[in-house]
Structures are given as C-alpha cells and as structure tokens.
Length: 299
Image 1 (cartoon, rainbow, N blue to C red):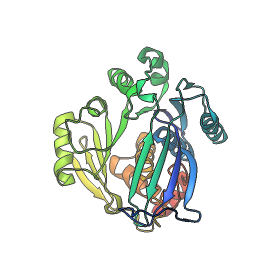
Image 2 (spheres, helix red, strand yellow; image 1 turned 45 degrees about the vertical axis):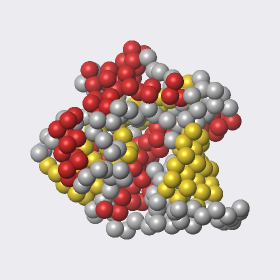
Image 3 (tube, rainbow, N blue to C red; image 1 turned 180 degrees about the horizontal axis):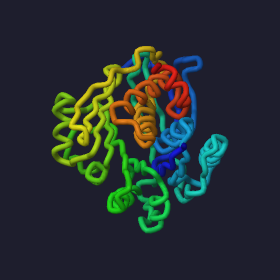
C-alpha cells in the first residue's frame, strides 16, 4: 500500500556542467560534449520524484516565479503524476542553480534562491495536510521553520536533511535539527569522525534516527529506538556518472522503506542501493528506479 508523504522544499531549474577537475584552471572555452545538461531539480523536486517512483503519494509545497522556468517545473511534475496544487507562483523569479562536477564525483554548487528565503507558509493552513500525511519531509529552507515546529507539536513523523554541517550549534539549521525525528546530513564538512559527530548530535537533539551519508564509504546510522550504531556499505555495483542528488535519493528512499514498516537498518540497506543506481545518471532530478528494482538487487 502506498503511503502519503508531504514534501515541502525548494524547486529549481538546474544546469550541470562536466569539468576536467578541481581546481579549475582558466581557459577561454571548453567543449564537454554532452557534458552540459539542464533539468528540473531542487531538493523538493528530487525527493518528490524519488518517492513517486517508489510508489508513494506525494503532496508538494513550494514557491516559484511566474516565468518560463516555473512552467517547465510544473510541466515536469505533472508529467510525472505529481500534483502542483500547493505550489505558489509568488517569487520574482524561479530559483536556478549551476553545478560543476568532475570525473571523480566531486561537485561545486552555485544555487541562486532568488527571493524564496523571504517567503513563509502559514502553519495553520498546513494542519489538514500534515494530519493526513504518513510523514512530513520538511527541507531546511526558511518557509519550513514554523511548519516543522507545528508538525512536531502534532506528533507527526518529521524528516529533514541539513546537508553539509560542521557545527552542531549551527544557527541556520537549529530549528530543523531540534524538531526532526529523522535527521540526515553529509560527512563532507564534519569537524571530527562521523562516529563522534553522530553521538554528539544525538546527545544535543535526541533525534529518533540520524543518518550520515559518506559517499563511497556508505552511510552511518544511529537508531536511538534500537540503541544501534551501524555503517551500511555503499552499493558495490554503482557506476558513478554524477553524484549530484545522491543525498536526496538516500534520504527519500530511506523514508519510503521506513514508513512502510522496515527497521531503520533495513530501510538504509534499501536506500544505499536506490542511491547507488541513481548516481549512474547525469542530473539530480533523474535516475530514480522502482521499488521492485531495488528489491531485485538485494536478493
């Protein structure tokens, strides 16, 4: 049976550019044939598309402008069977991003949020949507600050990904870390070993589950309900084309299997396979496989 997942987060149009390596040396022109691509993406879009591919029913909340980029986003979501009823065209322009990536999978992101950080969602207007959902994915963007607090007060299962984090007292992400039952992050900027950092996070915020994505080293799980700390290896058959969006794939697919009733460890085992398949595609918002494909790989 499919689950109802509320997803509130950024939607944008993303251009990915293949580069020879980092740092980038200056040259006036390069010709990376089939290395420059544009897709509809953004964390909210990536998560919504991944969950939909896995069979969940998704309600997306976000903001766009009233421009060509917005039309592209609406067309993309609708063509994938994702409702756009809760997306507001109130921005001056739709957010856009450019992502440089090298053959080793390293990436550099330039994300132009336009005026989206000045927008807010009314928590009271979200009551029914939160109540009817099996889980709420509330991305770490300003318009979700009061929403994640309300969801927590309603005892709704809340999940967020703070992405790159180097300080457990990070001012920008504190609201999200304090109110998330399920907290995801990357190991890219950790000031210490993941084992130490995940314990410090739990001691500070008491999240039910914390997952640290570690790229080729897999993912680390702290499940406080099972008193468990585990590392799940990366999918060994993964063929890396572009790692952009890998974290969103890991996050969304973990939530899918966890909400279905899997243990946190089993959900993460499924998620590393889902993310491993996804990075074989060039773009954050593409390459999402079905639930059956993952189950087959795990047999």
